[in-house]
Length: 342
Image 1 (cartoon, rainbow, N blue to C red):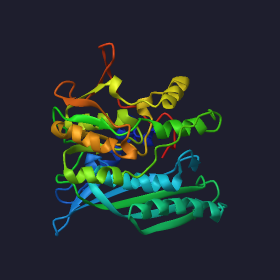
Image 2: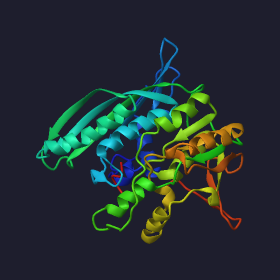
Image 3: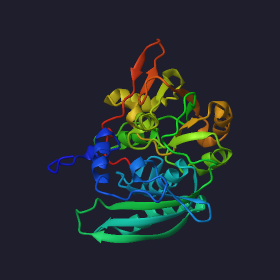
């Protein structure tokens, strides 16, 4: 990027514009991984560090600036804890600890901070994740919009093999655990100036109980929680990093009618909307049905479906096979359709 480039919201929105920005930032660092682990260059959900004991430590960092702070199905605290826990899980890890750093606007009432952190603490406690540290800063009024949370998640790999974005193999099946775009659509519906009448709630949730039993069994090549950039962004990352094509069957993708309605009303691509309690995964063909059955037996995965497979064709791209027999390219979005969703 040119030094005179003026940053926009899309530079932090999880799409192709952000990719260019991150590449420029990463070029400033010379040491980006520990020995042969996964590091910053891979731009996965986390990094790995091999320990002398033979264990693999997984580390993931995140920041959370969602607005409004309280939304249908969750709040900033639940979102920050769930998102960080899920990023560790996506790398095949069992989360064990988290840090919580706060940026708080001067004039914010303690009751608001307490309510958000109580929600954060509840998620951590329910998932046996210790809050081991953090930092707190109070900034002058107007420098922060009430409260932001930054986190670091830690866990140990429990998958038989490392799980990373670049490991897709031809024939692997693509599975999604829930309707795409639930989080983004629920926030859009309640944003000031829109306020659509809907019962839609965010899918925000930690995915430990759903995924850890599957991770331990093996068979998962790659996983992502499709947050910023949505399903389209997540699948394009897997395809491009693996240099494989992904072919989706449009009719197999589970669609929530209210998410679809909001997208049609506002002209938004559903596959670019974020999810915060959904996983999309590539799994070994022979284990796909078994993994799907386990997902569907859990409340968080009851809507799970096999939606496509990995192909030698269309390398680095995601293609959707339509019900009438056509094909269309599902591109990675430029950014999130609405700012500050996570």
